[in-house]
Length: 263
Image (cartoon, rainbow, N blue to C red; front, side, top):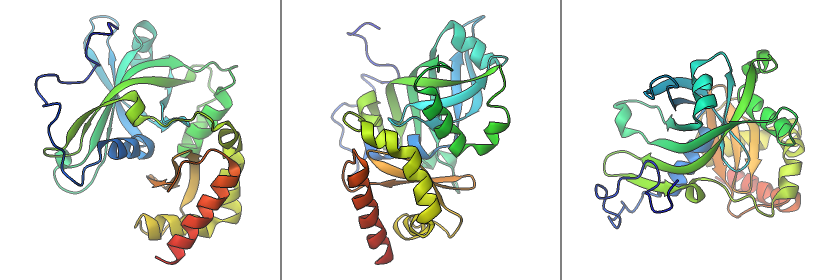
């Protein structure tokens, strides 16, 4: 990519660079939340025969830093397209009542690469994806299926009328520098939360995030927040401070549980 060229998805000359945003609109926060809680999205690849945009529906999860993850078969058209041209975009949209265009949606742009089955990251990526999509375990082990991870270059957020923003990868992803011990402890911490602190997970969801009662479970964590899921609904609980290790994590989760009990 030419360093002088605009990032993909941005609209120079159409969206005023210094246009004021509504006071209650925090683009990076909305974008990060959509990235973490949206469980399915529209994948747009470039048709290998003609170059036409080819859109398809895929289940989505995220790596620790927020990079989108997909599980696809090499027999699928979108996979064949990615094998020829890795460039793609992924539309992640919030759904709700009324006009769909009043709800926030994020388009992440970048390129996908297959995750090496023998690589150091495969076990973590497999666990994070299947925790969010447990039914995918039925076919995740098939020989023609593989995990792919997106390297995000830029993103465009539309948060509803007069709420739009072009974002860089740094603005939508999570900085994991110095958080190696937290990443190593994630699997055990998630299991511990669900086994020994299930009530805290319920309180996080119902008291702090205003969700309905249900069997809320912890499905992931990273330096900036905790991910909860019940059925097809996912939530994101932001931490009050950046967390890089297990000790700080325990203190923050205790603080959040106390806040939930007092809510």
